[in-house]
Amino acid sequence: MRSELTPGEVVLVGGGPGDPDLITVAGLRAIQQADVIAYDHLSPAEVLADAKPGAELVSVGKIPRGRGTPQTEINALLVDRAQRGLRVVRLKGGDNFVFGRGGEECEACIAAGVAVRVIPGVTSAVAVPGVAGIPLTHRTLTQAFTVVSGHVPPDDERSTLDWDAIARANTTIVILMGVHNLAAITDRLTSAGLPPNTPAGIVCRGTRDDELVLRGSLIDIAQRASDDGVVPPAIVVVGAVAALDLTSR
Image 1: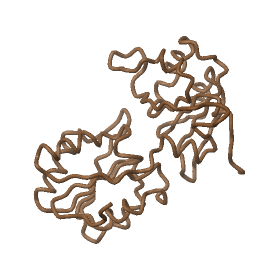
Image 2: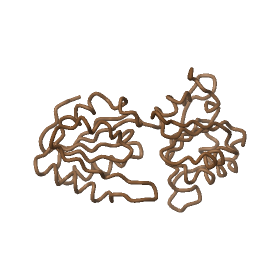
Image 3: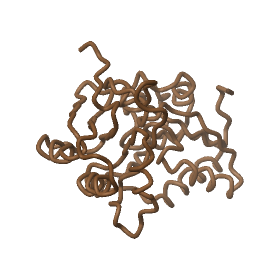
Image 4: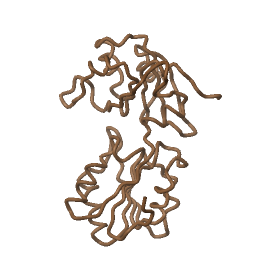
């Protein structure tokens, strides 16, 4: 992978799941070279200290059910700075193409004739459960995992997911952005036939020093999260592997 940034280029950098040590070497090199860095609120802010003096740092984060920069403005910012001949980095949490709108940003750059490329990041969907001791697959328990977004409830007209099929698939279910709608999601999975005693876990602020891990079952994990005041970012894992704790802590 080419490590040098080119003037007039946009580079989408996946920042990893939270711990700044989990950004890739290529991603950190891009941060160090950038003239402009547009960063999300879930990206590892600590790596911005490695930006070169005078680099323009622009917060374009979206807070769940709070303030946020419209995607059209983010697209316009990236294109504008690149067309000025600057080296532009778009820093995201996790990976650019896993619920990160990286595809939309690439499309906007291409449509404007701006060179764009991607430096992948470690996705939180896999890394956060792993650090918490929950393997998403296990030879004796499950052969696959399914990653879904929970930002809208199952009965919402905006939802395009077949939750009944997900419940029947016999895979580990990984739910991102699902804290607010967790009760509705677990109710739907139960009504679709997933046993109420199916193990479930939730990892809040995964990979960070203040990480919180809660374990329970499909029928009570939403209440446990509510009782402990869980707020985003958090990842929910449903399936037999959620009963495991493969850590020595």
